[in-house]
Length: 232
Length: 232
DNA sequence: GCAAATTAATGATTTATTCAAG
DNA sequence: CTTGAATAAATCATTAATTTGC
Image 1 (cartoon, rainbow over the protein chains, first blue to last red):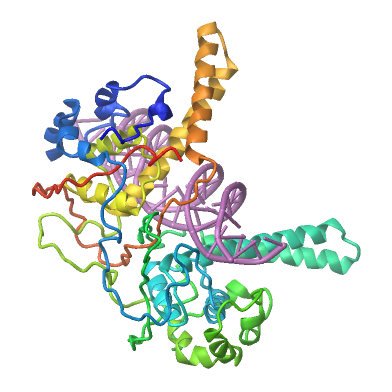
Image 2: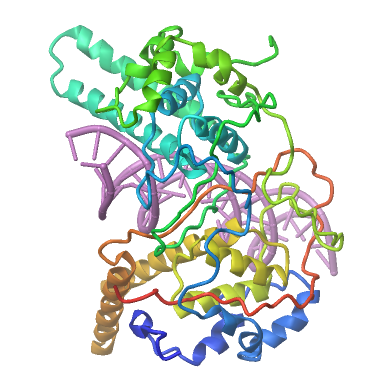
């Protein structure tokens, strides 16, 4: 209790302290009440801290609780590969990199959750890996590929000696344009994406057991598609 | 197969087509082979498409498969609320907004997966909501609060009439500083975060019903912590 | 009063930057 | 120096609020 180092300094700005309860429902006051059923409860909220005494208050707490996320708990007993990264970051194997690059070259840019999961499962056969690793890999690869290209083109632009050079630049720019157009595709919409998962605490250097372990024959003809779904 | 609308135009740049198989393992050639056991398989990869014939090939495919993510499958038999997620976006109720703002004011900035899950559960009592909604809300709220403040401070700086005004500005700036320092906290590190989840397909525009309904008493004294864990 | 058109908010994604492990 | 990980900034897209013409 007393241990709850409530460092309030972060919001010393105003002196909303109790005011918060007031500002709560009115802050931005939604233009017009969208729902009806909620109105009642809303009143409850407006009533300062009735909710906080009910649920909110329970929100306040330093940190603790279960380790793993309450989602997929299936722990595969494949001690074969593991450990390796008590709290370290993913260290891709060459097979994994190879596959990822292949997919990237195939056109995959931002796989959705489903695709990521499948990829993760596949890559899991070659080494420890999580979904986020796949996600980040694509993010980073894409970004760095782009900046490298940009850097190159700029560097070239800096010393345009021969006409062929200029042509090259033009080409690069053109490609960049194409790429961009292709990628954003007007309305990227419907990316069917998600965020959030794998929790992990900070302490506990102990296990950090991994998932996606072994080589169970779980290939139910899963498949992912690299290029954009359809030319919407 | 022929139906696979392979729109290659995205990568018309080079003309890597078969070259990909070659460039695969060498492209960026990792500094030094991290693993040993993998080396063997690596060779396999280098052998052009042995892997692709095994697993990779199965990756290529437009899109299909199961609807829901293959994770938490527990389907709650609460037909009362649901559906709706056909394709619309989360539309928070006032209670949800209120709680979120309360947490925000309490200092919560970037809740981790665990916290998000708990929040989601709580907010779920007031209306349909997903973890990503909570995540995004904090992201957006934080960002917009920041830009609004910046805009305000700049705007105010532009017409400093009274001394009290100046004082206000100073305060705002100071607060901004504090906040920033607080937030970035030197090394943000160890955010214990995650990404990826909820999939969702596109079709099925069926219901679009709303949620909110549930008032089941599922409060197992769960709690989240708003302020930063500890003054590291 | 109302519905179409316009504007303002804000939910959802993507991109750019930054930090730190190795 | 490379690159995995994480966050912040920029952007897109959709919904609600407001305005406008009837």
